[in-house]
Length: 406
Image (cartoon, rainbow, N blue to C red; front, side, top):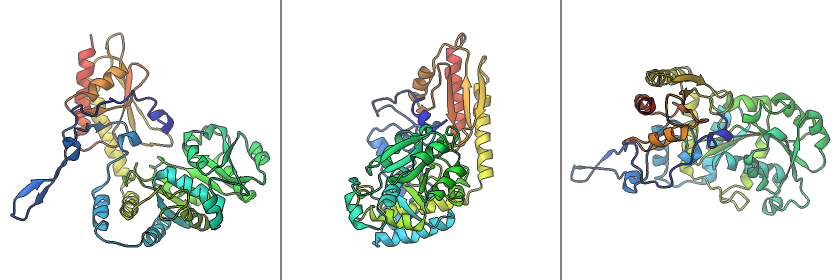
């Protein structure tokens, strides 16, 4: 399922946050001075905020993914001392660049911020006057060329810098569109199969005309190789989210690529006064992002995939106990590239719609979020399940299908 479809295929979330949800408080004890223990505050419970089992995936509105313990430890530990923010970005950037085969890198406030700052860097170079001028591009290059099939809402991250988008369809169109105003060529990875110009040709056109190329790969790991694939391919700038499959801070991302462009991008970023001043990333998020990236690269991804398949099998076996239910495993080809299970039922026998199923799962004793379908199906992702939650999913979906079956 593509990023553009994920939210569209979900029914509206409940307006109230007071619906009872999952009973996974994960509160840990702290030792008081008198030796007694007291549970840490569970603010989600305290404020009446619904918790749920996430069988949808790394959706921003659902707070992305959950950070690993190592990431949280990095955040907590680094929060106890002062240091210079530029020193943190310098050192972490060097490490990230080495891990991802880039000349340089910087941690940003998500993938959107990576695109905005990268765009700013392309426009200004190291010219401080231009940095202060954006989004007024008078006297500067002002156009970004992209394929028509790649023109989704994410382009607003570029447009905040004042640029004008120029759509093309073929390589010939692209070359004809290039002029003295052309600042950059932009590529949306999840739409790669939709456009006529493929990666290598796109990069080659940028090199031929000495125009920087940028690619958005926000949710496009796994596979882990994508972290360096596009740097190796020759894209000048690569933008990715940190709070999805890498389980880093939800508010972090990475901009990586050419050293000169990363240096220029940082002139527009916090703590300076450029267009990205409000896109602040604190030292804790920068270090947490580095730890998350390092851990993700060192993960046994074959073992991880096998675990997902085992979880899928448990849900599959549970729901197919209901007569008339069929299932199919689907793996999105580019973004959110993990196995999903589509569950279908015969509407003539099972009197429940996709939306009704979502609501019943949402309002159960343990709230569950799943992806909706076209009327008589739902899709579940096991990517973000905690251990044992696949059994809860299987049981609850079986229960609702059984109740609705004539």
